Image (cartoon, rainbow, N blue to C red):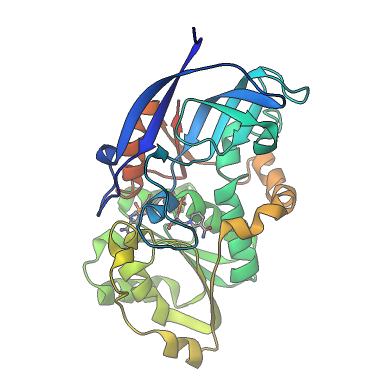
Length: 340
Ligand SMILES: NC(=O)c1ccc[n+]([C@@H]2O[C@H](COP(=O)([O-])OP(=O)(O)OC[C@H]3O[C@@H](n4cnc5c(N)ncnc54)[C@H](OP(=O)(O)O)[C@@H]3O)[C@@H](O)[C@H]2O)c1
């Protein structure tokens, strides 16, 4: 008889528009605990929900193939070893993996990275010292090329990537303005993240009105770190300064349906010409081999508390689909995680 039961969220239906529980099926499967050589059984503690999951639910190819139907939702995970058939891992060890939305996973040790809870809270492997941190750091430093005195404008500024970009920008000596939804998030940007300004995009109903406010608050931007796309970016783009750099990181405003529509919006390329500006898309996976650099640069700030590590934790494995949906409602500040 099996000792363990695995609980798994299978991705079974492609959403049109918003994703929710109806696109998933929760299944319980007995887990045979036999381990092959160099295999370990991991019990997940934190499971990541990320906007890219919604991109991969689209039928068309993007930077990746669509997520297949009928398999466990793919996701990064942090868990603890329950049983081990490897001399390199012992029960209780904390590990980062990509095991998806399931409570248990048998993994070959090559699929896991051991975490040291003494160095940093283990959940940071899914945040500042993981994929979102890598995106923020390399996206800003390599594509944004911030200089002291630059004006850095960040959309999605209260989220996982945005809140880090904003803080890294302050460290680089930039004047940082964040765009976020709602007065509470703007208050958070000013008082928690100590930004120089904040704009609540939800207070504006037209691109022109938002652009006017952004111009008033920023006086134009040298670096724009774009996490959201859509009409917010339409309002931002013409406000670029000479030799400005636009970093295209995400377009969450277009993920729940918009990616399948033709791109609409003002033509901004003439502004790139007039201002000799650059625009660059960036992808976290292109920097996976440079995690040591990230840890060296950002690790000390994490340890000293100089970077504010924000997490929104949703309790309960059953909440995973709803937690994914909540990213599109703006329910989170910092990194959204589900605690199993
Ligand atoms: N290029 C890469 O390798 C890479 C890696 C990681 C993430 N990303 C992208 O970066 C962006 C942020 O990701 P994250 O993980 O840090 O998520 P996040 O910012 O923590 O969460 C998403 C946030 O997006 C905002 N949002 C949702 N719908 C919106 C809409 N229609 N218009 C404007 N804002 C909206 C919400 O904040 P408000 O309340 O402020 O609206 C929400 O809290 C996403 O676009 C993601 O795809 C890219």
